[in-house]
Image (cartoon, rainbow, N blue to C red; front, side, top):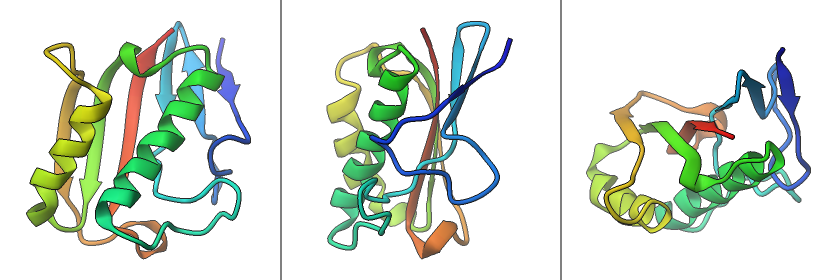
Length: 126
């Protein structure tokens, strides 16, 4: 049975989708961009601040689903400039330290919602 995940601790969906869906013990998050969940405005300081906001949003969604970052098995990362790959990796590593990191893809794309430069989605288990 499909379970829709919603939390006020992460940005509300800005389109016809949900923050996450859980089925058979797996949680599939929607791609998260660096929206502040209170103001629903993009974080406009630094790339690093935007990556941290995305990760905070994903963490809140996973927690609402009864999971956490240690249970993430796969991430997909979309950026508009792979020149920021080293900074992205450094921040990402803060959330997934050690050798127990999830599988991951990171790709450069031409554009992302609301003109941001980073979007991340995750799959985790309960």
